[in-house]
Image 1 (cartoon, one colour):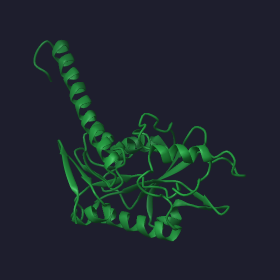
Image 2 (cartoon, helix red, strand yellow):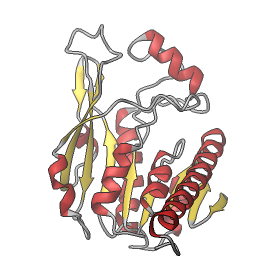
Image 3 (spheres, helix red, strand yellow):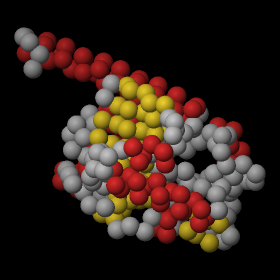
Length: 262
């Protein structure tokens, strides 16, 4: 067992196989999990879906592994990962996934993750890249909160269950990062202030950025060195931006009240 550990302030980032790192986390040692695993939809050997989209994603991100396991093997692997997350988490395990279409049939995320869930969110994306599949072009993904919450901020009940958010476009070196607003909402709603959030598929560190912005601690795991380095930089940059913002707020408070910062 070997993995690299990087500490950035209160946050811990691991570079290694999540199936090796997760068993080292004690049961109930984190508050929630928020993650978007590989979708098992981009092959190295052949196009998957729209050819141009396949080539773009391959050239930008999935160069170190083929995201095209046998469906049963993929389902068993990713369930194993999130079973470990369920053990480590006191509260909800949030998973962002989408329906996979293959051999003219759709496989819903709930066929992969069979557990009881507390919340179901539809992420409505503007537009679609799959416009030639002889079906309505898919423009949504799901976010499921599996398990039972140990904390819930009732102020967020009015967010409703359909979130119309554009995809993240600022991370050039990752093929499909989700927008920071998705983990941010999940974290603010179901993780207590100063709590701990886990992401076993950290990728470019989007969940980590959301943790920094919401004042939660982050534990992230990523096997790919390129993505890991991006995640470390994004988390560090988010901490610097937060510190700068805090400094501006304190300065404004001093000017406004004419004395020490409140």
